Length: 611
Image (tube, rainbow, N blue to C red):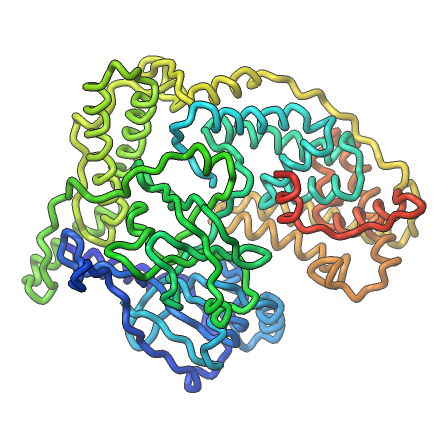
């Protein structure tokens, strides 16, 4: 039942972890603004197959800049427990330090107000007066591609980089920049950028892991493509954009020109849109100098996000590419429009049910939540198998190709219904005739159910398979000559003791069975960085730089001596995860030429330069 299903979904939202902002809510005004619905050329409302109006502004709202600045930048896991105790002075300090220093362009949030539980994205509106939020109460990208040359070409380049990571600084930096969200990727970029040789033991260890991860992604058809971004989407507050236009805000402001826009997990042929990115002067009044976001039009019979797998603005991230080769080769298809629809559930208001019927329905929803449906993933796998077959059939197989397209269209509609099944209450099932008998080998279903595919993804898979048995030579642990500097015994003893404590605490964090294991491990690292810098990192430290360098060297020697005694390069990680900033700064200054000075460069700039 749709009403009960939606209510259950909102109830789970109410039970989710939240924090209360440290503001006077009596002085905060929350207002409802009118949504902008889809309308046809005659001005009539456009509804979905269930009769509900479709909205351009679904999931969007505004928040004033000063309130946005009071929100924590990151909120998950253990951080929640640190914030809820408002009487703890130290927790207030941690909350203050975690707050955003610069207002973002968009914020994903859950808001509970006067009995309403809503979720969506808030545009940090520079025009909204302080303490005045407004709300509407209501890639890795697996890219299937028609060109036979583009995607394998990108894969060839990425694979070539993985083969050169140990010998070519540019290739190593490019691979590391594709993984800068991981410790290995960030540390590798930091170490390479300051001139540390690629054969340095821990850098070599990082590059080994990055090489393995990059090839694992390539094996699944996840190919790094330059000039491409994941951006959070929202509705255009100015009303200037036309249906086929977007406003894309990157690091240096708004961009102009043709772009490809896609929302994962879209499967339809027309889910990748070719759109025109334009400069919107009026938008600057709303966003100021904020960065990273994509604005969609509120005009037209349907919004572009809705045409991409029924996307909306409750935090959805959109893939945007301005890569010239992709734009040149891409052939746009007609946007998705529903052909098949899952039968609507018997939608009744709970007040219309007897107590026995209500209890039975609630228990059914409970069992359904405990045993989730796999129809969505099965539909996606079936679609991929059919798509693979479609792309490898010759032009003389017209009848078979038409039959495959028909099955794929049906699968897409089932898949999109399954995406919203928890909210709509629809019971989605996948007919047997829409399940393939055989799968392409790159889907790894085993030899009994697989055939060898010569599709783009099949060829990329085969390229990576050629290197799967490659042996990585064991690396001897040695120290950088320029770090062969005597350190005060007091610092050495201090960090030898700290390192012993760290190993115990990290082992306890990693051996815990709770969901916040990763957060617990990160907290251990943060603790020892704070001991070194008296701040979260070196850039924020007011501590004497000379003392920091001496302590960092002590950490380096203690860690590497232990790693050598254990014959385990991975044990070197403590030195770089805790003292990486100091060690890289020190190395850069010690190895710089007579007329050289170290400089700071952002990871986003590195990616832009390399791609």
